[in-house]
Amino acid sequence: MEEHRMRRQDQQRPKQIITVLGGTGQQGGGVVNALLDRGEFAVRVATRNPTGDAARALAARGVELVKADLLEPKGVGAALEGAYGAFVVTNFWDPQVGLREGELATAAVKAARAAGVEHLIWSTLPDADKLTNGRLKVIHFTGKARVDAAVEAAGFARHTFVQAPFYFQSFLGALAPQALPHGGRGWTVPMDPGARVIHAGDVTDVGRAVAAAFSARDKLANGSYLAVCGGVYSWIDFVSTLNGLGHDFQVVQVRPAGYDGFPLGREIRETFQYFEACTYFGPDREKNIAAANALVPGGYTRFADWARLNMKRLAHGGALGCAGDRGVPGIGRPSLNVSAGTEQHFGGLHRRRRGVPGLR
Ligand SMILES: NC(=O)c1ccc[n+]([C@@H]2O[C@H](COP(=O)([O-])OP(=O)(O)OC[C@H]3O[C@@H](n4cnc5c(N)ncnc54)[C@H](OP(=O)(O)O)[C@@H]3O)[C@@H](O)[C@H]2O)c1
Image (cartoon, rainbow, N blue to C red; front, side):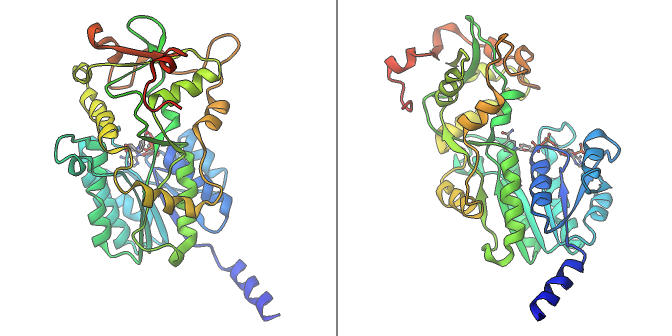
């Protein structure tokens, strides 16, 4: 009887609020979905455009919207006021964010602390600069990693770090297959295509880990790093899986310097070189992947399962609905900027006979 009364009181109490920065985007959108699925918290999304389509679709699902721009800290503070928890992701690729990512993220973290947020979850990545002794900057990794200290120092009752994987969704957008210099379609990469070093996953799975972390409260060790991972893959693994679904893609290894003539080309080149040197999640990968797996017992989506649903070859040959020849936004077409003498092609069955490392 007493237990029943207490449960009823609990149900009548207003739900605690989680504010999601970036909730109209891919990572934050996954967080919103997973929080709504769990139903334990009320969800508030901070957006620059509360009347946009993405925001209105969220409002229709019961999400509170607050106008906020990371470039204007006052609005961010208002979006965090009264919230129990906050998920913070910043978008390095937004031209207004870019090199200011660390500064803007740190301001958001401080605003969350000032607003009384108890549990902050920051979407970070490994410090590639430190891990390679300064050889590779990988600004969009390193810039995020350097915010971790500010999160620790802020003094939240709880804080958690989540590391998003290399998105499978990239193959539908920024890294869609392109026409290759000598025919065919696929990718040119400045790294060993057989190196099984890319921790990848469905970006929406980040939300499942984050929502579970908010619910776990003190069952999750404070300051945990959660690396959300569908699997660890080589470029050849990706291509083999896609070709097994009826595609005919290739991956071509090119001279790293070939990337550097394009805007942001160096950043992309260093990213892949960092993967090869340290793996995507770096030396703490096993511990951090295990921590994320423990929160979501069914585990995360694997590439073959995701690709079967999202990259199946269509009968008329118009596969993917991808960006195709437009190239990587902001990068141009790195595949055209290669010296033929240095290329190695890997595609279809040929690479099996060549015994490319990493292909099982
Ligand atoms: N691609 C990958 O494989 C990968 C892997 C790991 C990590 N990442 C990182 O993921 C981050 C991007 O996250 P995402 O993929 O979720 O991005 P996304 O889908 O492009 O969405 C960007 C989100 O950021 C918000 N935003 C951008 N500028 C803002 C500003 N000035 N003030 C407030 N909100 C702002 C947008 O909100 P509104 O437009 O509604 O204001 C939107 O919700 C990048 O930093 C990238 O480095 C990417």
